[in-house]
Image 1: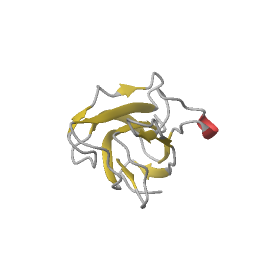
Image 2 (image 1 turned 120 degrees about the vertical axis):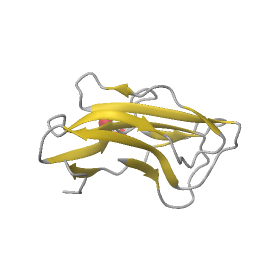
Image 3 (image 1 turned 135 degrees about the horizontal axis):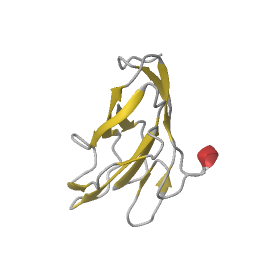
Image 4 (image 1 turned 180 degrees about the vertical axis):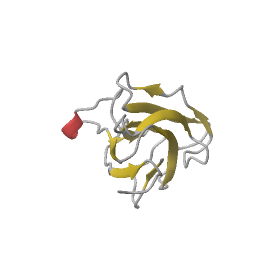
Length: 133
């Protein structure tokens, strides 16, 4: 599942934190990567942290050696493996808001110099074949 920023007029950012949740009866976590990420420079990406209940993963990266970007585009790709059949919600766990996520559990982009956290997210759905349902 590609996770991207969209739109224009984005606040400058050098870091992202993605917390994706799904139905563990439909998917399990396989891997995460930032190949092709819009973040500039070299990326520092600690190992993804799967949620203990098998229904999510936290993945974060920070740019090193490049300035902030205001570009929309791919942040990272979360790879899920089908474990069943049906339709699963795909939920980006929010920073603050309904999920009350924080700097270690929310989904956001952040500017290194001003610590501005951008929290707009959009959810979706997928079946075991990767099609919206």
